Amino acid sequence: MSFTSDRLLLFGATGDLAQRMLLPSLCALNVEELLPPNLQILGTARAPMSDGEFRNFARSAIEKYLPAHRRGQMADFLNRLSYQPIDATTIEGYDKLAEQIGERESLSIFLSTGPSLFPPTIKGLQSAGLTDGDVRIGLEKPLGVDLESSREINDAVGAAFPEERIYRIDHYLGKETVQNLLALRFANILFEPIWNARYIEHIQITVAETVGVDERMDFYDQTGALRDMVQNHMLQLLSLVAMEPPTSFDAGAVHDEKVKVLRALRPIGRGESATGQYGAGTVAGDPVSGFLKELDKDSDTETFVALKAHVDNWRWAGVPFYLRTGKRLPERVTEIVVQFRCIPHSIFTGANTVPNRLVIGIQPEENITLSLMAKVPGLDRDGISLRRVPLEIAIPDPFTGQVQRIAYERLLLDLIEGNRTLFVRRDEVEAQWEWIDAIRASWQQAGQAPEPYDAGTWGPEGAARLVARDGVSWND
Image (cartoon, rainbow, N blue to C red; front, side):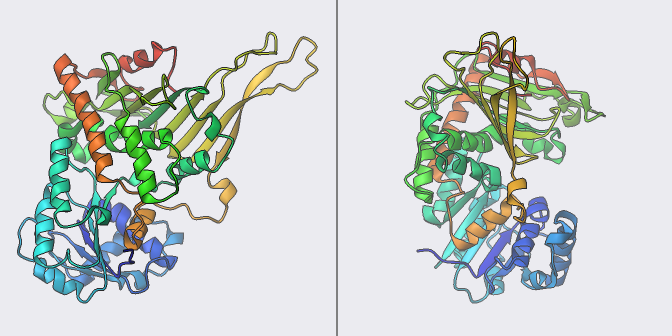
């Protein structure tokens, strides 16, 4: 049964995610009158704070992270907010939380806390009757550090909520260009007939960051690039690129096709992965320290990983998917590159032809570029000359007047209204972890240690060798 919530309960309401994303997103939705008019928002965290203090806290976060033209008059939004402190690890305090929520028709809960707090939080919510009736829950990643811990978390949440009421969040799925990938494939006859091994040579997915690990040092040292980025964001992107056409844009149909891709992933073989760890270097002209100096101890945690993956089904037989992600790289970019095959025969004697390439930019700029071969202007008395030219669609350009949203705006609104399409189902999460755990086990068995690379470069030499064996180069 679908319902629109009239109460939203935010755990971790004073945390970094709440300040940068959640509160600004909710304020922006309120300005555009997209929130239900009767929606009340209760924030909770360990810090003692009154309603007034929390509203001032929210105002400061919104003024810092939301552009002025999207804030409107904040008074109406701030009046929706209230606050109740709680120690989520103990059962005490949840009754007061229920009292503060008051009479409700339906409730959405968002857990923006560490996953270790999920089980005690669920028990506390159950004890106060806050899992009864029309209630759904959103879970912020990470959901475990391996398949076993992920199952423990999902079992704890599943004991209180049926699967259709659990909304696992991967904020990449809220980005416009990620969703536009589905429109590009399934709303254009131009692409879908050639979206297969016959016409596509390989696909690259890159998630590059210029930042180091900063305040996430302890978390990152226990996690690494494979579990932090590949397990969720990159495998979700891969599944959207490779999935078969769903029967509809319904949550169940989309999730079914994504799971098929994840289960078709071939285990990574010997020589199909490269790992790295950044050392000192220069990023954007500024000198930066290496990972081990920042950590102040020895560690074999990888800050870079590159993989050669295969989806073993009819559509993608023989097509490699090259994935790479890393910290302290030269630029911040997330993109998908679809490299098409060469034409079977060129009629243009002496003219070089270059295979078509589709580049889908996700961040920092959202754009789509299709490279085509075109004739260079001229009389061509010595033969036609060809050159590759780009056809570019910068997403804001053809949609002037449309708001470019924070990814969490869509995800929070979908949580409140009950649309699960852009969230992650349990079997997806577990299929991702099975593949990732096997990679980590192979590294351990082979004694594979991360290769050093200088900050400000595109990673270790092993990443270049990984693709060079196939006559490929990364799209730097």
